[in-house]
Amino acid sequence: MILTAKSPEETIRIGERIASRAKKGDIIGFTGELGSGKTTMIKGIVKYLTGKEATSPSFVLINEYPGKIPVFHFDLYRLRGKIDMKSTGWEEYLDKGLVLIEWADRIRDVLPVRTVFVNISIIDGKRKIAIRRGRK
Ligand SMILES: Nc1ncnc2c1ncn2[C@@H]1O[C@H](COP(=O)(O)OP(=O)(O)O)[C@@H](O)[C@H]1O
Ligand SMILES: [Mg+2]
Image (cartoon, rainbow, N blue to C red; front, side, top):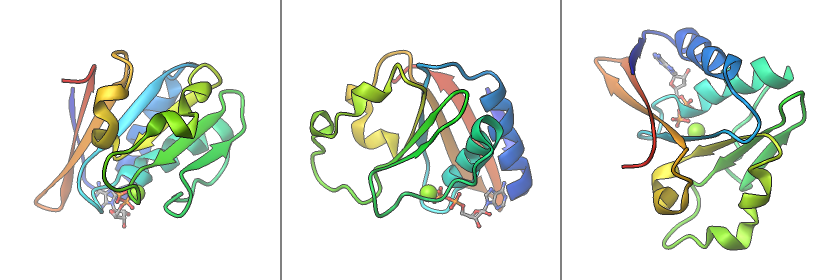
């Protein structure tokens, strides 16, 4: 599915729509260049599910937002080279809530096949948002 967002507000609204269908155990991986809107969409998801204002966890690996469906927001931006995701214990979060992973392309190979990928690209200032299930 391909969507277009012409403003940050539209990006947030798409996040809210994704959140309205989310279930515990879901994993969503976000890809797209720096500044494309990954965190913006995640803000929409986190607000919808937990009422919390998400911030970018760029200096920590993960932010947790308790809620009816708890949200676990990973940002892999600062991790370089081969990432040993096993050592982070991230799989323990999988059945506890909704897992959101920014820069998911860095660990694409270890993500479960059910992972939904959201790729955001900037085209003429607008955002093209491609959503699909499964890693390629
Ligand atoms: N659809 C959009 N159109 C224009 N600007 C957008 C859109 N969505 C998000 N932005 C803006 O892009 C900037 C970077 O967004 P951010 O979510 O931090 O990107 P990323 O997490 O991918 O690096 C922010 O200023 C945000 O408001
Ligand atoms: Mg970000």
